[in-house]
Image 1 (cartoon, rainbow, N blue to C red):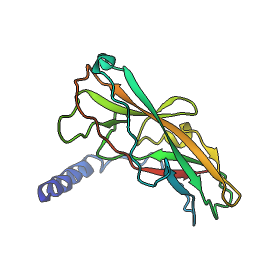
Image 2 (cartoon, rainbow, N blue to C red):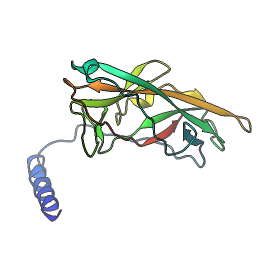
Image 3 (spheres, rainbow, N blue to C red):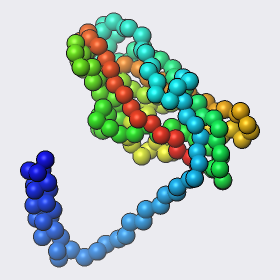
Length: 185
């Protein structure tokens, strides 16, 4: 860990040498909002859920881009309070160690007997569009639903997950996970 920090500091120092004579060319503004209260979110009835995909033959996943085993899951929003002007919500699937940043698909993290060349692809079930996990485009591309405004009201966010062949898939186990949060507008 110390070696990485020293290297990062050294590289940062060298990087600043190259830009010492550069003129400023613009400004970046960051905008966000913090809400005091939100909705309760559950996946298939629980906050930390397991979604089980069907067992499929690797013969269905022999070419890059092949998909199989599409499985539905639902994120349900309830008890939405103090959201002010925000009337809609959607899931945002966050980046993490199990996410291939380049593709936005989930890596196979099975600890033993893992299938190779397979990832998991999430889809917005309302549009069937692939979700690029960890990518900021989710703020506009994922389907938003109206938040419940009455006591006991609920809203459902439908999604699917499927096996995705990165190349010819070999037989084995497939595991992965993703952290999600609810985004409001």
